[in-house]
Image (cartoon, rainbow, N blue to C red; front, top):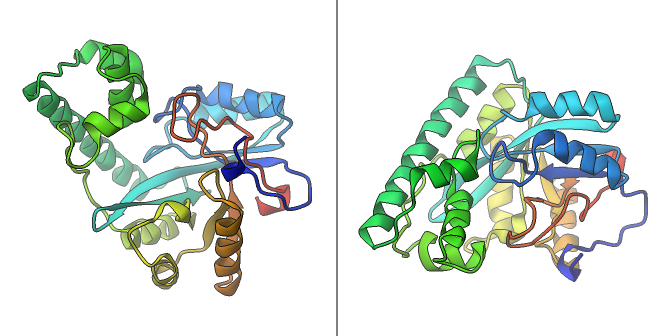
Length: 278
């Protein structure tokens, strides 16, 4: 694990609270993620796919078989200005009609966005066959990481990072803005459906006064902050821990693992927190 992802607080490192699967843009199936957590010596794993809970049933089955506790969650995509702000939602009521309706709408918006991005790429001489994208996406809802993998397969880029840099970031030929919801809406929704809203990886928020933003989110109902993350160096980790303490926020942490080929190249269990964080 890189120095950015290593945090040295004494204690048993037994839970990874932030993992992605093939239900969104990770490389492991929900079952594989849970069993891999067991291999890594974890006792709990948080499955937090982007804007979906579709993998949680399979993960729950694997949890029963493996003995690894499942932390049910998802990661909701929001924006402030042009900056992505992600809200982790832990333990929502999965039977909530309100949550189901919200996620179905988000799924349709994500599909529409990818269709527009593929059209823009085609207009710029970069054609991605829908069947190829489907083979990469599987049963999950397509997103930019799936497009990036397709661009690598087709030889337009040598890595997913390069694919983003050349084609999929703002100002690049394939970019199309996402459907926007505010952190306020996400936090209030998570609270409404019985979940615990947590700000993900605050260290990735470069364009704003992060502490002021966090304080504002607390007024909406924010309950936690992801202090431990591979993008946080030791000084950032210390800073967010202090902010969390000053605002009486829950502290969480996890690898944000998607699998090989992603920006941080983290694996499940690369960032661990003591079980009492769960």
